[in-house]
Amino acid sequence: MFGITVGQVGYAVLALVVAFLVITAIRAIFFKPKKKEYPALEPEKVDAKRAAEHLSGAIQIKTVSNPDKALVDWNEFEKFHRFLEESYPLIHKTMTREVVEEASLIYHWKGKNPELEPMAMLAHQDVVPVEEGTENDWTHPAFSGKNDGEFIWGRGALDMKNHLICVMEACETLIEEGFVPERDVYLCFGQNEEVVASEDSGATMIMQTLKDRGVHLDSVLDEGGAILSLDIKGIIEGKSLIGVGIAEKGYCDYEISVRSKGGHSSQPPNHSAIGELAEVVRDLEKHQFKAKLMPFIIDLFSGIGRNCSYPARLIMCNLPILKPLVKAVMKKIPPAACLIRTTTAVTMCSGSPAANVLAQKASVTVNFRQMPGVTVKDVEKHIRKVVRNKDIDVKVLKAKEASSFSPTDSRSFKILEEICMSENPQSIVAPYLVMGGTDACYYEPICDNIYRYAPFNVTIEMLRCTHATNERIPLSTIEPAVAFFKRYVKRVSQK
Ligand SMILES: [Zn+2]
Image 1 (cartoon, helix red, strand yellow):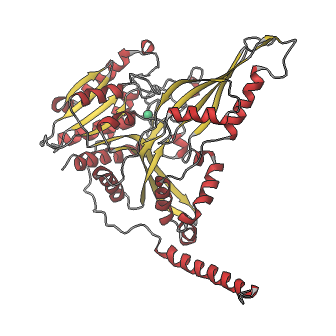
Image 2 (cartoon, rainbow, N blue to C red):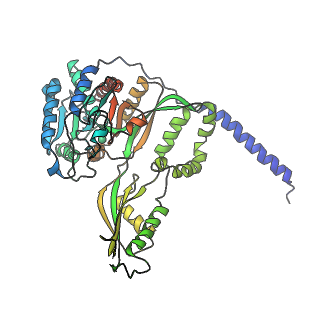
Image 3 (cartoon, rainbow, N blue to C red):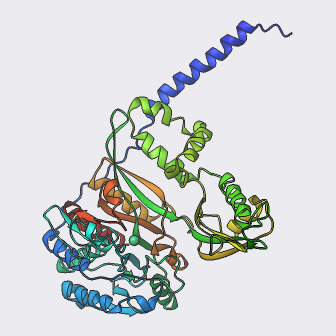
């Protein structure tokens, strides 16, 4: 009609595709890590042998937490406190130490400049129990702290007596060297991090104690992220991904019940309570929460993408255009899906107490892990919206809200990034969302810069031993971790 032929349209499309490919080819050349010089670091003095001995000793003390405080052996915590006192004489001479609640600890190292906001380093003293019946599956007993020359074995070796001991080693050595911080330094060691959503958690009590004294923290460093080797031949080689947790997901358990008449199973209705409940479960699993690529995911992918080989960068540099595709793929892979949406996991279910009795009440327990921005109340709204049966009872059993996001342009984040990059220029420091809970989120009322990162280079296979059989840590990771904490304290505690 306007004199344009099919052939001309074809040429125009072809020209656009060629232009796109050429632009992509050029963009991929420049899609590289942002050039920045990181200063070389002075070597740090670390007594690795002493640190290993102390970690081994710490593991031997059974600081197991329990949701029921009456079932906790507090003597073990007292023993742990005495152990710290004997192991770190300079810390105990230089810092004040107080016990909050039953066994949580606050160490306070006074700085030279009271005008500056204090920094804090967190760790939890407690460990999870060893599952009954699995004690003999361990290569070395769970509370042996055995050092076989390659690993230190035992409960807490990775979660997180390693972290606590390395923080203490770093401070003890700094004091030995005559270091005095500019700002105050707090070491806060909770007593029950492993007990999810405990109302009177040690961390809450520590935070409250500090808050009551008018303390507002410059920054908090806790467990959460880790170092992960990235080595995929032809795509990305010899890189280390440093995941720094800038937020963590929430946690809630909801019990959803359906009621029915019950009665004798010889005269069943068309649908029993359990039959109705099956529909509820189907609705929940079919209608997942909406997935969303939050800015940190883009930062994460772009950080990795810039370090990929040229062919892979051809794809990665187009990430903003590929967002819908990335989202669709991530939704299909459970370990990726949990990064972009609130997860729904139906974990428990109950019906009648006998095989020949119809249930009067049938219930499922559903565990949700909320994305930041999704509240526990939002979860209930979602349940009521997607479940077609409006005759359900919904009850929250346990809940902890998701954290908010900490900024990635704060002074403390930049220092953390700089230390990691200087230690290993092949690092990719990327913000990350922590799936599990940490004590760090309880500090939100007194701190805006909360980071979750443990400077231990361990394989994914080894990380899987956390909370499981044969938890252990490679000896080789201890020295760099203590050096990291020394550098971190030195830099963050300055103005
Ligand atoms: Zn932990």
